[in-house]
Image 1: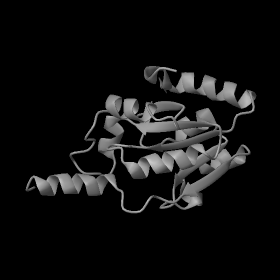
Image 2: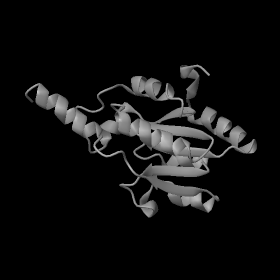
Image 3: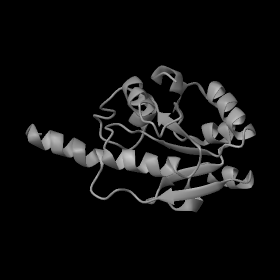
Image 4: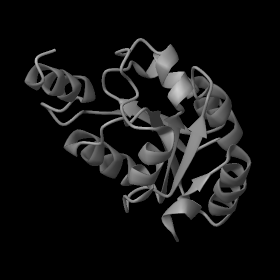
Length: 163
């Protein structure tokens, strides 16, 4: 599959997820900004993928990142660039952009078998978790690889430029 074919709309993703689930595949979903892809992200996504057969990423659009409580300089990379980099990973099956403040609508539309977030979340506080559980799925958290953070990388870059 070509990289651009892995970056799809919510409707296309829904069709593909349904097809995979009908074939018996277990679909894992996670979401995030993935602004500066680093080893911590790669480790997390590989671990998430190992929980099932397919991994779908809900990727925040540039506008949704700007509404989050992040640095005013974020996103550093455009949504198209971030989507392309994620699609290049073997562990990633699909990338779906979402513009809402949370991926709730996307999760409810795709209805993944497993919803995954980082261990900095409590399972009962994960957006879309109650929907996934109510539909027979699971919600899991994964530990982060220590020492990696997009915010820390951003601060290191700013510090090296005297800002």
